[in-house]
Length: 259
Image (tube, rainbow, N blue to C red; front, side, top):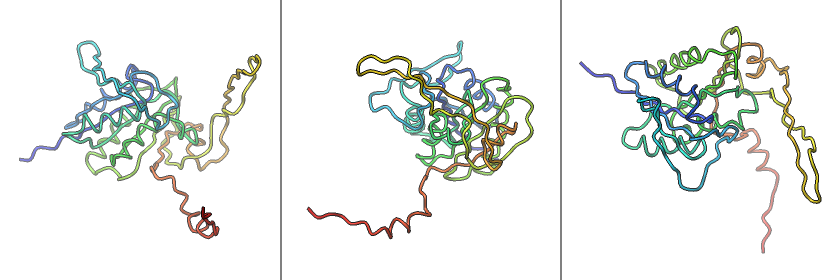
């Protein structure tokens, strides 16, 4: 009789290891058979850090919840925590999947490029490991239900294999859920381009950034579906290349000047 191989999962986030949402996610995922879950997450909140990295030394601390070991707190960005997890904690026994989340607040549309939650998952792809990023509305969402939904995905990956080179971005809205919508990333629900002068002295000016909310009008996007009450699933790739422009740029007849 063959013994099922343990499926190793690295969990991280950008809200920091003290976020109760990451603990809930670990609890639910750990209920799956033949699964090992390891947390490597930032020591502090690193929201909005995308896939940025710290260049200095990393301090790593073991964190306990009561008398139970929770995971490793890394003094860096979300991508640093994932990289440490893959290169150090997964050196002898590689991970099969990276999960980033559960994030407080959605990561649909163009704001995804700024997200540390997305950045942590993309770091998994950078190292050749399939990934899932999961975010939910800040209030009015059942975190246990979100975690069970992700566990459903993990079970499918464990059974059938994960799509190579793909990260799934999952977003859970508040309130009564209308269903599941698989959509392309698009639109923006935040307007972050407004600045208000707060004070000015000589050569120094201080501006407050005013963030507004925008209603999406493109029904083909994840932002529209999310705002309409759907759980959104968006498959994302690491490669941002605009392939349709490669031939055009090649024909621009650009020259290198000789010294």
